[in-house]
Amino acid sequence: MADSKKKKTSANSKQSGSFTQTRSEAPEFLGQSKVEETTVDDRAVGFLEVYGLVCAFMAADAGCKAANVTLEPFDKNKPANADTLPVPLLVTIKFRGSVSDVTAAVEAGRRMAEQVSGVVTSHIIPRPVEDTLKMLKICGFDTN
Image 1 (cartoon, rainbow, N blue to C red):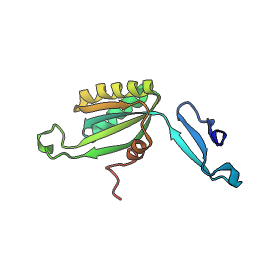
Image 2 (image 1 turned 60 degrees about the vertical axis):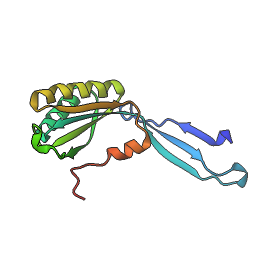
Image 3 (image 1 turned 45 degrees about the vertical axis):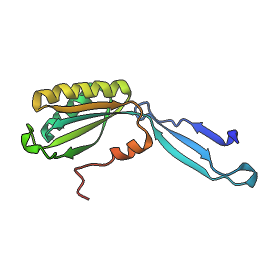
Image 4 (image 1 turned 90 degrees about the vertical axis):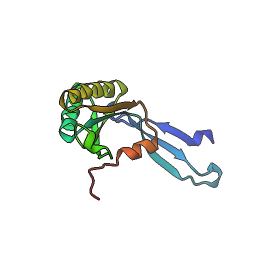
């Protein structure tokens, strides 16, 4: 049965950091096997939460210029204490790439954001699990 589980690496670029995993679900003696193929994305993700949309664009631009990263959709949040904040809207920038590139992008974005309106927090996840990857697709700017 161990032979029925296979793992192969696709010809994706280093940037993508993903591979295809093939797994057989049915016993071999039945003469049939259900093959399930999933794509695993092992790129790091870096979060940078800043005050305001203009600051988010400035920080995202700085991060993308500093490192070989891609962006996931921004997310927004208007907290209950919005009236006491420098800007009443929090925006989360999500960088994707290798751990070193994401770290460089978050740091460059942080430096830029501190010059514009400020940083709330930042964090890097080296290899997010599948459920975390699903949550990355959620965007507070979607109207649907």
